[in-house]
Amino acid sequence: MSPAAQASAVRELDVAIVGAGFAGLYLVYLLRQRGFKVRAYEAGGDVGGTWYWNRYPGCRVDIVSMEYSYEFSEELQQEWQWSEKYATQPELLRYAQHVAERFDLRRDIQFNTRISSATFNDASGRWLVATDSGEQVSAQFVILATGILSAPNLPPFDGLESFTGDFYHTGQWPHEPVDFSGQRVAVVGTGSSGSQSLPLIAAQAEQLTVFQRTANYVIPAYNETLQPEAVAAIKRDYPQRRQASKLFPFAFSFETTGKSVFEFTPEQREQIYEAAWARGGLMFMGVFSDLLLDPAANATAQAFFRRKLDSIVSNPLTAEMLTPDFALGCKRLVVGTDFYETFNRPNVELVSIKHTPIERITPDGLVVAGKEYKVDAIVFATGFDANSGPILRMDIRGRNGLALRDKWSGGASCYLGLMPAGFPNLFTITGPGSPSALSNVLKSIEQHVDYIADCLDSMRSNGQRLIEADEQAEQAWALHVDAIAAQTVFKSCNSWYLGSNIPGKPRVISAYIGWPEYAEELAQIAADDYRGFRFTAA
Ligand code: NAP
Image (cartoon, rainbow, N blue to C red; front, side, top):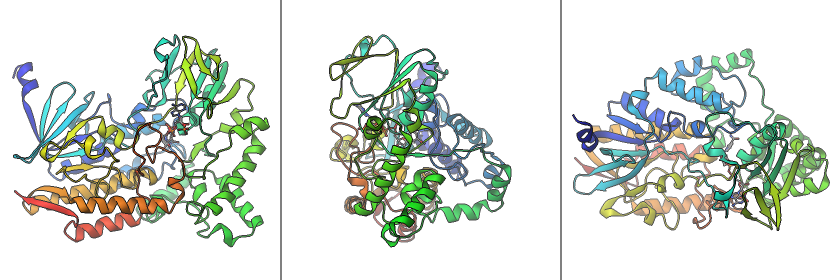
């Protein structure tokens, strides 16, 4: 076939997968094993998703690697050796590459290919998927494995194009190491990406100026090299441990009193908080059962945190500026190393842009409150248009030409976080309304992929051609997701969980707070003949 004919030929698939991060890889593996003709389309030059793009200094996972990893293959989980408690980005990328090679997945993945649109044909019941290079694919099913945090948000700062130095977004970091030696560097943003990277940048640069809009809670990681005996002990009964971890809220194990803050005296609380701080990590917020539910309980954690911060940061004014003013856990806690200590360095300055935003960027730096901060490089750690962001960067059209952008103009919603009504045979992995970021996302990915694979199997054996979510079931699920969130601290501040980090984005909670009940509920729904879905026979 000539190249032109090849370009115009429509490839026929059972399943078109968008993305080859951890979700896309497992989809290719499992669906291929089940006999479906699949192909994944990946914008990046290799597998790994998040861990392919986020190469900024200090980037590492915030859930322990022995749990933030696949369990679908016993051989894989036995042979892979994590070197640190929280793996670094290069190690996570090597893991994704290893999985791709071990299971020969690359032959069904097309790299450097962005999906631009997907259109459902009502007459044929198939999707027509188009790539950015004009290639067309016809598929019975489309599965969006686009990730939660894969659409970088670079706010449109005035004058950015005039800046004469280099600038970077943490989520689109160059593949070559960046050397800040001898440079004056600005970091904008103090979420996980900014907070993880700035201690390393400060150690290298001549001067670091941190522009902070909202102070965040940064809990020490206490990262460490994994000891072979400890790893061997876990691997001896890995499957049982994985099962036990999945019974925890958020799908990974953590230490908790399991009791209310108010069941303890102030002295006991202090000891419990001290021990949780000494362990470090994300689940500081789970040490008492009511921290995420009761503002009064949460206030005790905030007060403890403030005392800790004051004991680390030597300049009281800087400590004041670094003190968060919202409920602990509302924004994702940052798991960091030497974050607060970094502000004691003589070459680090903190500039609050809470009340005086960045006015503009000049050829030489950034202007705040009329003052120009001259820098050689700017690191934008300004986050992502999360969850629905990467999905809506594609033009997706369902029944009767309905655009997903229009359907979601008031906020993203999927029945069970799996499928938007009006879009037959279109699944999302860790999509809006599923536990996604409020869970160990590797476990959520495996649960979704297993579930969808079983559903496709069942449709094939029952001679069903289409599955679609019922509109009312979707609405009821959205109300349920919101009602659960309303009982927690998660709606009490602005965060990317709510989409409120993106100007103009509807403020809707994107994650379902309810693991492990979520997985149980989905299993029950499947047992009830996929209650809330409609099927069309072939
Ligand atoms: P983020 O948490 O959304 O933080 C973005 C930062 O940029 C915030 O401090 C934000 O301030 C600031 N910002 C945004 N727009 C701004 C503007 N126009 N002017 C000034 N400041 C602005 O994003 P992230 O740090 O990339 O992290 C996102 C998520 O990715 C994390 O919560 C986590 O789930 C994941 N992540 C995890 C790790 C890890 O430890 N494993 C590392 C990196 C990322 P406001 O708070 O005021 O909006």
